[in-house]
Image (cartoon, rainbow, N blue to C red):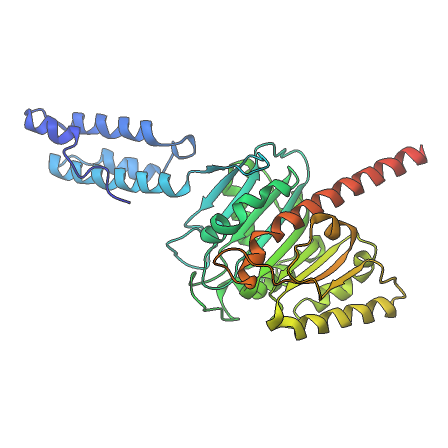
Length: 373
């Protein structure tokens, strides 16, 4: 971002007119801050204001402080101010790019987390959280802007969609298992801070989250494992979507085994979309699921496996009607591989299926309550 004050400022113009008093500089500084600061930053940091008050030196020093603060302020507004998201379904929401979180994996040039909240989000209702873990060679901001922003239409109005920056070095292929994100309770602290700094969620806590859906693409599987197994969120996870991400073949076996009954009855969802290079790992996972179903004497009717029509795209009805879905995908969009293309289409379908399942469950409970009465 270029400094908006590289040309002659009113302070400099005043100096040329022999009116360069400290009072003039202070007045212009405070008026500029008032005009360009959103309500969230009206209280910024008192120490900065005190340091300005303490400035009793020459006009040059005061002007330098003004330049520094003004540039810092404009840069902060440009990077953190929410912007509207609109798509073909006219579903409006707000996106917040959060930077310089205390609980972050490092100091990045891009956001530490991206948060989408519907315009009709109701904080009095339970929060449905969806976490998307991007693959390697990208970052949270780009992942949302390039493939996710137009897919929010399928989500329930109380679904909060979060893309955390789990990589220590975004846009790289670096993904060590001992990175900061994988430390026990790290993501829980990060999530707490994300909620506290996102205006619609500010007065909510993790206890207000009714259920969690986790989506992982490509190299994001390690982050998904950490979120699920190391942060006290395990029992809240009701949906897992694996987008060509089964590089660890047994990464999600524990969750599958513990929830096999709910998956069989469609109360929880598991979706695995894959390409040729992970066929063996995926087919092996599907085989272990069939074994688990048989071991618990559960029906396989809720298991959907499509290894043939790979160029088609499953719609939300298929996801909604089956607790367990395996789908090979050779579908491609322009300039994208099948591996990357799936991120542009399947998130919408998964969100829509979760929304439909939630509504169906609500109606079932209402019917049961009326029947009892």
